[in-house]
Length: 224
Image (tube, rainbow, N blue to C red; front, side, top):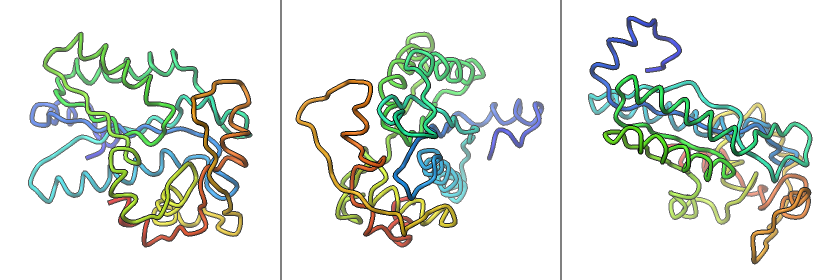
């Protein structure tokens, strides 16, 4: 059930029986030369859709909120098309969204996050909401981290614009993938280094993995 498709009287009725809202959160940023800028949002959007379908099969309901497209993406901001929202602004925005759902009466807020840079601001925003609303719990799900074992049981590697992400987009938005441009490799740093152009070192061409082994079949399993 999608929030944006409801009228306000419909929403008022829904919130009386539904206690969980799912918010897909992503980013607009470079993902190699082969994936669309919206990759980190397309993935959680598809997962949210499938969660909704599965929950309905079980005879229950969740509310799927419109996605948050823009995220905190400092590292990839060196590439054209990356739209970076500062950490404080992103935290405040997410806090405002979650606070409104809590005030409407939802007791469980699921953040279905598709972008690593969002993690810290989301945690801080969720903690503030939890302090204000003691009967509300926030679930922060980072699909590529929290289900890493599952991902690596399907893909031989994972990384930004790599085999796992490319497989997911091949499955859900294949018309947007340019596999003829899909090249890359792993770049590592033993410590976390923060400087303005670090993305050029850690994500050459906006990639940190080899996407060449990606397939739509792998993506179907990953997005389920």
